[in-house]
Length: 291
Image (tube, rainbow, N blue to C red; front, side, top):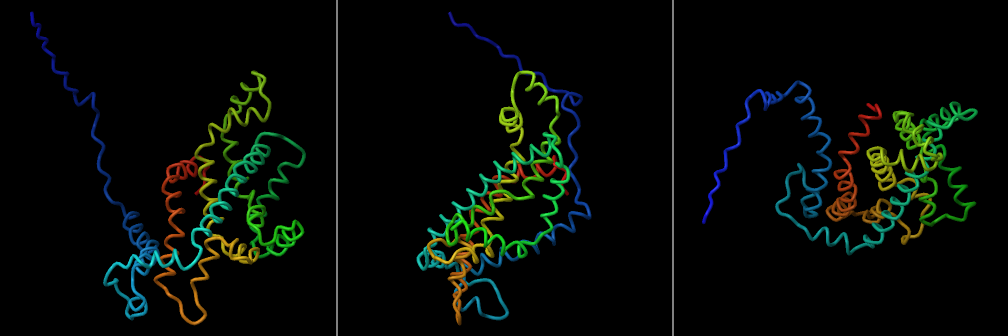
């Protein structure tokens, strides 16, 4: 014997239950100002991509214009004319090592400045902040002497060791730890946790956006650095990608489409990392109070 079941239609939600529809935001004068600024900021990137798919003759014509076709072989030529993959590997090793070092050392230093009272901590923290105003050109020679005494000249270690910790990273971490309620630490101490266990078990799970922000900023800084690798590295096998790009420039003639194609490929890892971490980056800036 068959049995039929009638399903009742779900009741419709009343306007009071659904709430008012969010109003569509109208463009403000600030948006009208941001649009041309965005175009100006993206113009060099767009022009670089257009040159990378142009011919040599199209890059030298005046007035400049759009390329007549897409010449993807410029990317293949850039990859084959130089040890591009080896330079990418060197940049990746140096950047990742510096990111890991900054996450570890800056977190420990920031936690100490924010949570552990000791004699002269405030004065020492001010001294750390003061180093942010010192240009790299001033400390470049002392850093080179230290690297030479450590017998690390012309090695990847010369690029990693000076960038294992930065004053900005210490400042960023310290700002985060000051926003964490002390009740969380007190509860962990009641349970018998020490300083290190409190940092690893209580603080680190809350540090996701801040760690992502420090990772992105450190990666960008190390990946795009040109001056320090130019001083510390002489062997082509130890060059980073930014240092290797200069090999595409000739003394009398430069193949600009190949050089632009190599430049575009060198920026792809940076763009991918920034897009993936953009959400954490914005959240950390908002929570830390940076403007």
